[in-house]
Length: 227
Image (cartoon, rainbow, N blue to C red; front, side):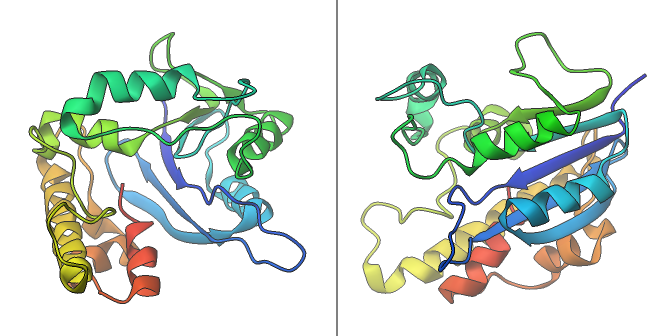
């Protein structure tokens, strides 16, 4: 038995509060053929859990979360964060430091809620899971530079952070251009094995049909649909 559904969650690390609304979380799901089943956004852990409940295939779903899920260290960096910098630094990839003093740990709560709901946490060291409801932490930058199909063999894409020597006035235009380049490369995975068919869902298809906006709020929505 193999995994039937693959889910990606670009989690908002902050939970929000009584007076503050949580930031958007990007959510997407595809099947083993690369067809995008669901794609969109949620607000807060409750909405994210509800989306997972209706999207996951019982007994055969692997969810990857772009957020710290296990934070046991009182201070400093987690070992995995140090490893990212050591192993991927030449691509200008590093990881944010997370510890038990960090205020933004929504991923830890999400993992706990999932485990209470019957999901199993997997750190990946035992190889790919073959079944069940499984959740793992991921760091998309390491995939983008580590997978030859992405084409980032020299440096990570700069769709999030301003490249060096780019004037502030041009930052948004450069960021939008880099995001479009990234999406074009992801579209090329339609012929990969396994494939990813961005054009198979209305929301992900818009990534291909519309150029990246320069307005910050609109760009954030688009970025959450990217890796």
